Amino acid sequence: MRVLRPDQMRRIALAAQGFDRPRPAGRIDIRHLRGVVRRLDLLQIDAVQTVERAQYLPVFSRLGPYPRDVLDDATYRRRELFEAWAHEASLVTIERWPALGHRRGHWSSRRAARLEAECPGYIAKVRDEIAARGPLTVSELSDPGERTGPWWGWSPGKAALEALFAWGEVAIAERRGQTRAYDLAERVIPAAVRERPALDRDAAHRELLLAAADAMGVASADDLADYYRLGVTASRAVLDDLVRTGELEPVEVTGWDRVAYRALSARLPRKVQAAALLTPFDPLVWYRDRTERVFDFHYRLEFYVPAGQRRYGYFVMPFVLGDTLVARADVKADRRAGVVRVHGAFAEPAVDPARIAGPLLDELRILAAWLDLVGVVADGDGALDHALRRAAGAEAVAVGGS
Image (cartoon, rainbow, N blue to C red; front, side, top):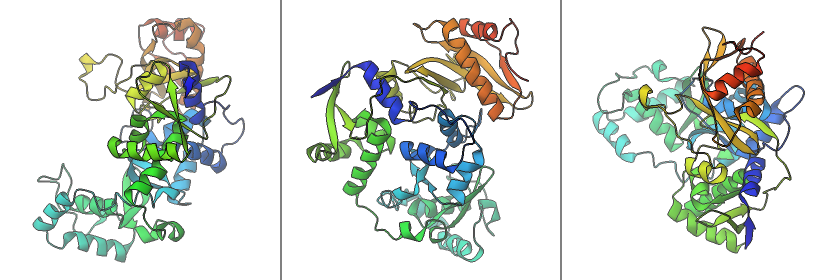
């Protein structure tokens, strides 16, 4: 069995995610986006907007400043991606519609039955209204109902739309700001894709696990199952078959206590010279156990931790430099002040803050410019915060701008 060292594992993981290539030097367009999507297969959506909406940031991390409407255009006009429950709520490549078919219909039938019992015929009426009127948001329904009762703050209209969405009867036609507009799936999903038969669970798992393996390069069974939130037990049997058919190679990673699987597409570059800030929802770091195994980087979300108990901050972005996660920064896009605000920056224990402050400052400035903000403000009082200010040329609070 092939044995991989930790440094080789890091380079494979970064290459699979597209961090082994320089960012485009010129105008960034749909072709560049397709390259990112081809590698990642999906982009997680999340409501947190401390810096920018979650789906836009992984593309920025790989391409640098790009027009956000390129992603919107690919999703809601070109129909090259679609919204689905995949790794949580996600934008997924359109080719995965048949592979996710085995999940449609499993959105808590108990919840739908409860709504139907309380409001007989209501779900069908909502579907009929969309069929007659076209894309609708919840508030545009003729009878959306009130946000009361056991619907987690949802109105009956929202619950009905989400049931229809999960069943594949409606799809997200567009977003109006953050608000979803729902339309019949037959008017959103291209016919050539929609008419393919849905895959059964084993065939779907096979396709999705191979896609996850391509996106990670080398991964454990738990890593692979997490990418599309598949059951680990069911995934193991499929992985065994993929090894038997030669579509995955079992490998050993030094220091791991579990077998790993190498995608046939996995590359091991001699060197990776990445420099990028990562959203907490980036597929390189979203499975925290894997992040620790691959990068020796302990990372947890602290959104819901009381402010006084947070170790690093609210929206903490890991910083990859070379082939290592060297630091993290608690970042906020302070649009009222017109700056990217760094509440605290923290180098990893073995990392010299003076060595990484310049590259980190460069990335923060690039992020600020992409967000149409004029600079970077470092509020923290740690060693890396001070190094950021020194990298700007003076012990000033404002360390960027124009």
